[in-house]
Image (cartoon, rainbow, N blue to C red; front, top):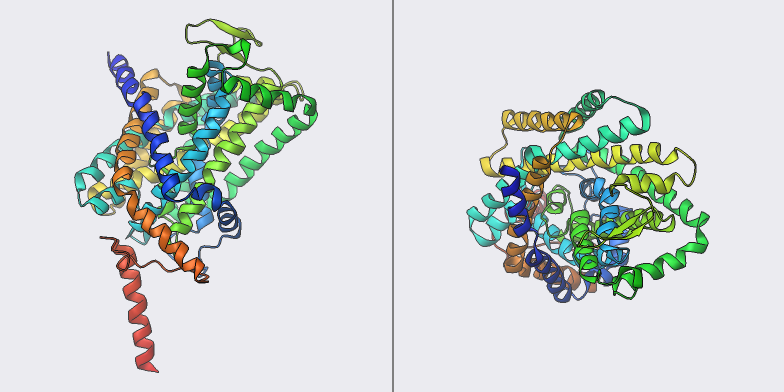
Length: 497
């Protein structure tokens, strides 16, 4: 009964209107910011890899670095979906689904700039840590606390327990398949590692993500490059197949255009998370001189997640023919691998072409890293929303939340259920609806902030300064206090001199 209800609700939450809303919103933001995700791509690259936040580097400073914040977002976005989700998209949408994943990412990068800039504008300094996200900016930008509470509750549904169960279940299965490790042992190890990271606070989370995520993603992409080099003669044909299938020009996939678009958009949104309201939490935690800097950096995450990692998975599967294609009626259009359930096994089969047995072990390691880091950042997001609802930081409440999360992680290692997956989808769907609808009303604040940043850079200012009072942005309390402190500091220095 419960599962039937959740499936019905998720059918509504993730129906065509949601997809149109997220893509439409992304296009609106893209046009309003003059295609920022393309024109400012060099700036995104510079800010990301030079760590140029425009503030003094100080290990004792509050908040985390811009790169650590980006790593947290990537850690949340890059997960099992980048391996299993891509395989599912190809199975149910054909190779053309990959093209529509790319389109969704390119549009979503514009949304990421808006929501992550707002996350920075409306962050709070709570207990020596920066906390923020859609709950914070929806309330402060509109003056309506119920909007923030609605988002916070949705986030706690998704990130309070259910999300971690399928993630650790994937880790346990892959470790058992690849190395013969019993699921119960995997559950204990994962929970211990989670506690070590989470009880260290946001700085430890950021430091952990900044170390693990680049290694994890780089190793995966390097393996994909090896696969492409060894199958270089097939690469042009695979890209041609993707483009032909995307526009219903491939005879083998006739009538799959709708499925290709639907699966590409759905998996694209699930993968890069732009518009769901997850990345603003990580963006809010960093220290920068101007909110747009973090917005640009976080937008770069979409390229890393979908254009690099998801594409790497797709190409490995396609060049080795490690996939089947099934149309909406259930008819098998392409049967390359027999009776195999779409998922991580597709990638394992592709990698096994490098060396027998290699795929199971490498994918087990990749899934382990991807799924574990996908638990760390969302747990921090859940904490931020709990703090928002309580209006203060309560160590006891945070400990209880962490223990609840750990129980979900251990439960997932030894078993999982369709109800848990459905609960996760429901929470994420509710988050996305509240967030994207809110962004349609308050995106003007991010646009003004972007224009201000561009005006200052055109004037030759190396480190643009954000003044919410000048821009008539209400209730940006952190930035107002920061500006006030600077003015008072200068006044004191002048008096002493």
